[in-house]
Image (cartoon, rainbow, N blue to C red):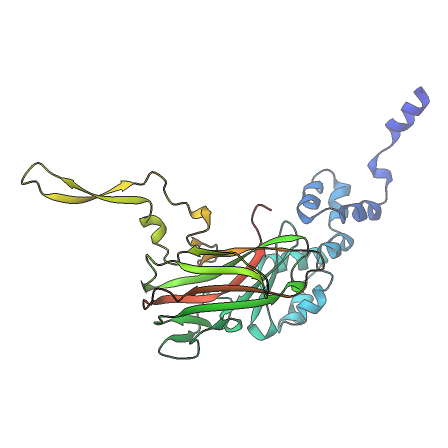
Length: 304
């Protein structure tokens, strides 16, 4: 037993080839691989291997990259597979002639897409009195859609489910910002849906006015002063203030735009069919305007 114990004490990870450790790391995930690289110098060296990051990149990453006008530049500037992975995480790649962007979620390597406004179906979108197409330096795309004035607001986007990462819970977001003169959307929610075409999909109501969430945090009541019994309006904190995290109100993104949750979709293994996302407000009959739409983003649900 003493001899056996001595043999175990002499064993070390350093006797394993680096390629073996790299192969083991490739069966983890990007976040865990980076954490394990801090264990020792051998793990750090193995974690840098192309064997590891080739596994973390999508199987068809070369085909996806080839759809971009910047494909040659991207591949030439990538010094390693890890470098390529990080570039796809940090800067969305514009593909399909500027209609979509592709990126990876940094911690997992899951696929993320944004459909540009030009890739969406917008009712009356090509009618100048209702919608206008502009360039915007803050957008990743060459064009954005500005809502001038409509009484029938309807926006739809579709993407094939095979383009998404399997066994992944996704959330779709409308990405937009106000022009400074939003109207008709303050107290009228819009109806949003996410689901496969031809299947039942749950609908929910959300608000596109970025200030409505703040307004909902207060009850406005009239208080009377003793002199002449004059009244004044006072904002009192609501018993249940609105929360940005509940998904019913827009929240600010890191790129300066706003986003509102449209709904969730679980992409099963072997999932086929078209995923459709919609935003509409057609019931009130009110005229509304003052928004700029960049697109619809589909990315893995946060915290999942």
